[in-house]
Length: 295
Image (tube, rainbow, N blue to C red; front, side, top):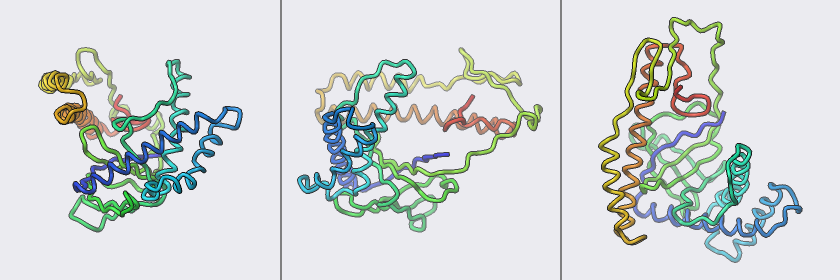
């Protein structure tokens, strides 16, 4: 199965500027590719063929747009191929009954990541203290960056890293996601599960969880966080849009959102860990990933 663990990056001020420059160039390539894609009639080929037709025009575009020579080739290719992924995702939503539109031009704050595929990156775990490593990225504004990364947990066993996605969160923090293939955990057959070690969980209305042992677990109290969020959002509404003070306040609001999300995620992880530790058969308790949700 595909697995994409995410780790925090700690770039310097100069490296942040180079990463932002690359992100914006990739955004402009995506917008240009979307404009060219929309000019191709649908009867000229499948979705893949039309997107690949735009992607194959990148070498010619580099001759006119010299800044593209300072960006790794697979990063530009992935930006164009994102059109196909986005259209397929819109099609899935439409099949579920959602009212979807078409792909739109991306503003600077809406395009937050770029992806290396198969090459152009290297994860060096031998340098730095414990739980720290170095991520090398080639051709970021024409240079190779060596960015410190915090490995809060080891990567699962894998053959190779397929992709690395570098993303800037609304808070301004940078993260790297490594796309790897791992073996899907085997699930025990129902007849092999000892019911004495199993536990039944029910998501409540007034409480978070009720279990078969008669235990009732309250929801996480985020009252203080919500009150602070309301104050900071009111302050943001009074700032002049896109001014320096507005941008500072926007990041402050984004950090509160991120802190509340982290608290909820941590709460679910600890709760899942408690049940997995006390009941070995509770193997389906994991708040992350496909088929591994807290339920």
